[in-house]
Length: 373
Image (cartoon, rainbow, N blue to C red; front, side, top):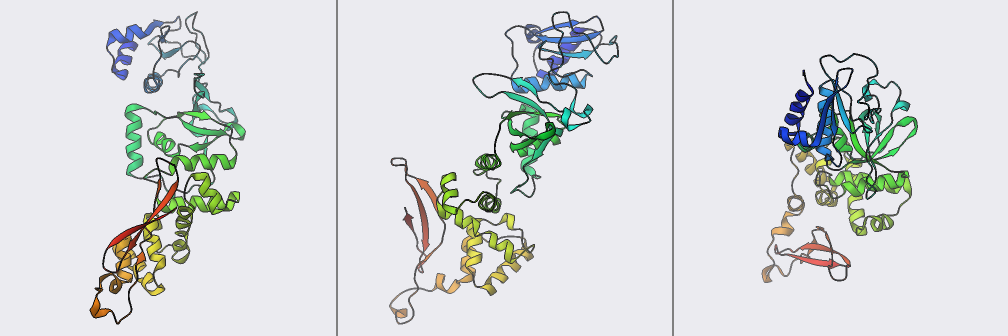
C-alpha cells in the first residue's frame, strides 16, 4: 500500500462494500509517522461481523487492533517508522482498546478484556483473549470434535459470532467458560485470538445450571451426556431427583430414567460406546435378563450398530410380541400388555400442567398410550 486510499481499497474488499460506502463510513488519512488510519465517521457503527473483519484486516496488514478512543484502525504505510509507540492524528490519539495482542503477553495476570460495546440496554460485551479462557472442571461431553464443530466454525468464519459466550472471572486475569464451549473450540480452529464475551459473577452451582440450561435442548447433546450432568449435580450440590426436576422444569421420571442409563457404564465399562445409546435403548437393555443383555452388548460390539428400543424388546421377548391371542390359546397363560416406556413430556397450553405420555405395547401388536399426571 502506497496511499491511504489503498487502505480503503482493502477495506472495500474485506467488507464487500463499494468504495463509495467506504468513503461514507470512514475517514482515511496518514499520520506524520507514515501510518494509515481508517476512522469511523460520527454516528457510524459497524455490526459485530464487520467489526471483527476490520480487526482481522488491520492485523493482516501489520497494524494494531481497534483503537477505541479514536474509533479507528491503524496499519503501517511504506514510510512508517518502526517504533514501539506510534502517534495518531492529533484529534484521535488513544491507546488501543484491545491492549497488546494476546500472544505478546507473558503472564496470565496481564490479560485484561477490552470493552467491545457498552449498550446500556444490554450487558456490556468484552473481547476476551482465547488464551485467558478455562473450561469448567466438570464436562459432560467427552469430545467437542466432529462434523458439527466444523460446520459451526465455517458459519462463524462467514458471518462472525452472533451470540457472545458467557464467562465468569477467575484469579490471575483468567476467565472460566460458562456457556459457549463449542464456540470457543470453533474460534480456535479459525485461528482467532479473542472472542466476544459477557462477564458474569456466578457461583459454581449457578454456572453449571446456566451451562446445562443452554445445552439441554441441543440435538448434539446425547442422553448419556445429560445423564452424567444430572448425576454430577446431585452429587456435587445435594439435589434430589425431584428438586432437580423442578429446577429444570422436567418431570421427575425424566430425571430418574436418564440416571438409570449410567448402570450400563458400570456393568460394561469400555465394552460399548455408551455415548451413542439413547435413554429408551438403555432402558430396554437394562430390563433384559442378564444373558440376553450380554448378547445385545456383544452384538453391538460386533456390528457397531445399536438396535432400536423396539428391536431390543423384540429380541428379548419375541414370543410375547408375536403369539396370537384368541380362544384357541385361552387355556394357556394370558399375555399381559407391557409398557414400552417411551415417555414424552408435554405441557397443556391451557392450564400449563405437565403430563407424561407412556406408550403401551399389547401382545396383539397394538400400541396405545397412557397419561401420567
